Image (tube, rainbow, N blue to C red):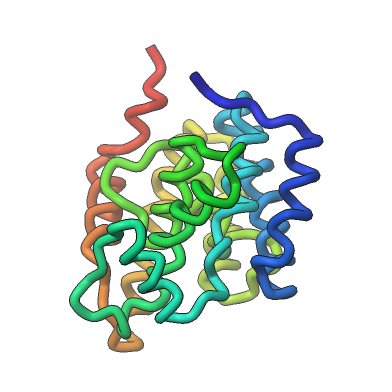
Length: 215
Ligand SMILES: [Fe+2]
């Protein structure tokens, strides 16, 4: 059964997360919440408050350093790759679900945990819920990085044209986002997580949103 989150619970959550985040990250988090709600109204209007909760929690371990992440990984049996020092950007999405379980009991919710877990790399066969948290993080209004602006404009322009099914626009936007991420990682000689490649390929193959197929 899906848990429901009242506006009051979200107000409390907004305050509870504050000490977990640096001020800039807190502002980003609130912007992701707004963006996720906006996307939710379009795609899964019954789940807007759950999307807001996932957005508020998505970066909850972002300020931890590598040794703190590794401690959480060992306590919760989270698998660490062979090159942790080269994958530091990925750790917060692995450790956040454990911290949500422990510190945010009322928000123990499989959709929230999986959206937080996969918000950085993506994964094969993402749900609509996961994709919306991922995309909200990418295109929220305080993002000024060129790719973020391009992606945000593409997505909302296509929706506004209203020519294709919004889910098709979402799918194409997800492909573009992974292409951008992979290109940037290649340019900076970074490692490309295999989940990112699987995510990209599954959106290219239209093997996505199987949770939301309309009868
Ligand atoms: Fe984020």
